[in-house]
Image (cartoon, rainbow over all chains, first blue to last red; front, side):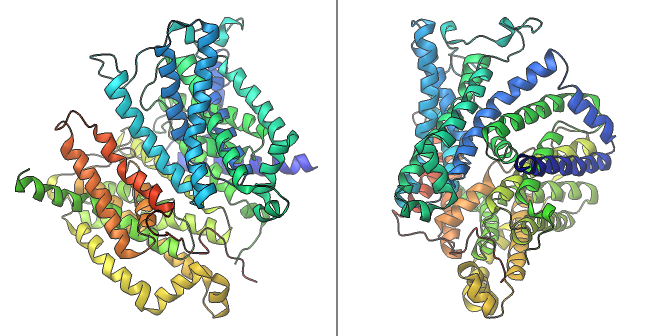
Length: 346
Length: 290
């Protein structure tokens, strides 16, 4: 019964978003049923639909987990975008700088760089919150802008191939590439970029679950999020938990770099992220800040991203931005959950 | 450095600060009443897109501006209903509005103009003159007067600082907050409209490029006070103007480093290194009437 209740709200929110989105489609002059059939159907075909859906889902699992860990501690990490941007540049830097290392050394090193860079970028607003009480929302937004500026400047000044007109770094060494899933799954061609970062993302879901619900640190993070004053009275250092939650959150966001740099583009490319960090907020909310929910919600949004490309091409007027609208509506409906309870505030 | 260069940087500072100032003044209303307004970005986009579209069809930038304001108020109404009536998390709702307004204009421009997110060019003669700049800077003394010298200003501050007390004194907390959030929609939309039918001659996808967030930062930098907020907007406008002028002039300093100075400064101010920056006490908390 309890599980059913947890499922009900997200499902109602998604349904409400699709209905509202359908009305928008209708107003624009297309057939909502046809559009939605295209959106969902094209995401479920084998191997391309499912392959790309999981590929698009992978970064969203990481950012969804990142936002969820923050939420569990009562923190709103809007900065996953900046954290993953810095992490991607750091990962690429390791990948093209230590190019003479073997894969056994380079892959773990690059992954560690991804986690570390994301964690450090999140630790700055974490310290400011813990030490000075300054609000993490503003600081993480500022850190997003700073990340965009710093990565652009560094790439332009030091890491670009001479004469390259695109703002991107050198390629990483082949030893830093991680294999695509197509190599192991019969029937899935290797051109589909789904890679073992997807398995890493599933492992991250399990680890986050164990961390939050089976360890003392996780318990203290959740206690801080539930009621910081009570936690403080109970002998928990709220400041330390804020730091811990931000660092873990940033590290998770940083792992997006493994998928994007080591498994897909094999270099850092300015503006590679279509706002994965912000979509992660939708993923975490829809997934009720639980790793299992995050996994399902990320795959759902991954499917929408995949399907959106087909909507773009095969409908008269509707573009792939329908997906953005659906995402926003899902967040709105989950946030205003009182709407479905008939609760009256004023 | 010639005088001409200095004059032109002053002018472009004012031009670039104006949309920030409009949005920040809107944010001031909303946040002083206790409603976090991270949605300024989306509200600006709503104003920018609607005013460019309507100007294109109607041929009058004033009608366009009016329509843009209406759109901003409408989107702000969604934020207000979610935050005030349904007690939704204000930051979450604001984020949703920003994502929504990234998608809606692009979706509509595809349907209306068969483009991927931009409106058609508006002829030079149909662009709005510098009126929004005048509005922006006239707003500062007016908002100051309203906030500190009128009964409404007192109520606005009371609702943001101590809603229980305001309620006891007979002030309708939700009515003041609705009014404040809708005002923020109108002002932010004028800021957005100035971008699309003033500084430029069409709407392009995500054309605010984070200006709503920067306006919010300026508001915090200015400690939620009108005059200080204006100075913060001028500083941010100056950083943008300077980085535009320096583009390609000095090969040694990358412009990105100048662009990030305001963001770093905002964090420094927020941490209390340059005098304490204190938010309205009830900021972010829904008010439950007892």
